[in-house]
Length: 168
Image (cartoon, rainbow, N blue to C red):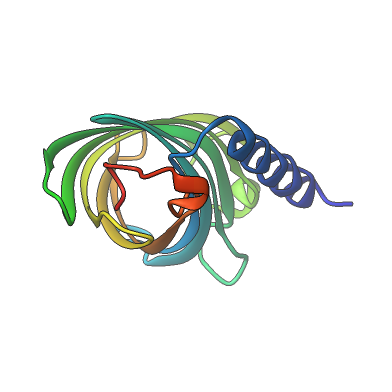
């Protein structure tokens, strides 16, 4: 089993285990575009919400057809700047592990196979059962920007008489 598969399985298991302890939990994915490397990637994520703050574990992968073949495993903190009844605007801080798979063939000499990644940015999303979102992020180490566009599904869904004020 490849390393990427092991990380993805571990993340999915972790996301599933959170659903047992939290009614305000979302899961989903995103398409990602890196403007500097002109790379296309995809990601999976979860999100645990606490009033105006949420924690979002993530796995992002940029396949081998890109100039840069890499993956990120990390966690974001989101702080809701605006939290209206049907949408929100939020600030993002992300810390992650970056595995640059094809770094030996890259002309850039400053990166290693294993790197720490730190991103800052902002996003907008809806508050409901299905939540489309868009995020713009800046990677401090590589000085590059990325756009994440995706969809999150709220797992609480108001089941069993529970009503989530944040996501309904």
